[in-house]
Length: 77
Image (tube, rainbow, N blue to C red):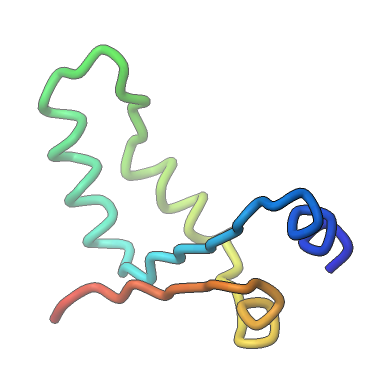
């Protein structure tokens, strides 16, 4: 919480946007991006994404409540 208080004192606004998207959708988006040939895009393989997905711990309600603004974006069904 201390970091957020310091940012507030400095006049910095903080917003957390968390994208709650299933693994298959993330991979679909990555494959599309990877196929577009942008030399500045960081390529991530399906295998890498699966490893990252296992390690990632989504924020819980208590963590989201620590920030002045937190928005959870959910994938459309």
